[in-house]
Image (cartoon, rainbow, N blue to C red; front, top):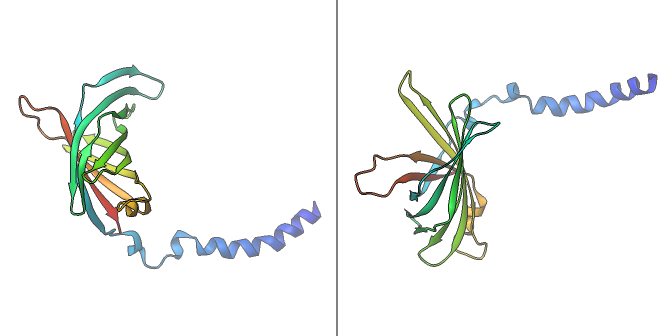
Length: 179
């Protein structure tokens, strides 16, 4: 027991210095992460199919929305949303909705890549606010002009526009690269 105590007394000073350097209070300039800069990458119009209501589960209400097509465009890229993706949604007991969408994009020059979009929707009816932000993971072919998409963090917004009579249902996703 005495040996363990001596070892701890010898080791703790070594680690405590390292721990202090990671202490939140040691950051003198708190604006380091305050105002992230972003670059607009693309706007996607995602056409969606009829919702499949799986029902109540141990985690909340589960529903799945098929992704049936669409288009995307940005300053350096454009193309189509391929059919076959899905948005798995979970309406939690607190009323928030978690989205986990996975789909494929095909650029006009023939490259296909995967998008995984995880979002949170929070609606506060007391102040009539709608919050929906997401984190996107892009998996582009490394031997393509879009390889740069594999090396960044992307944030997104989701807009659910009013659908006019006769229009197919869709959502708008804007994606931004964190600089």
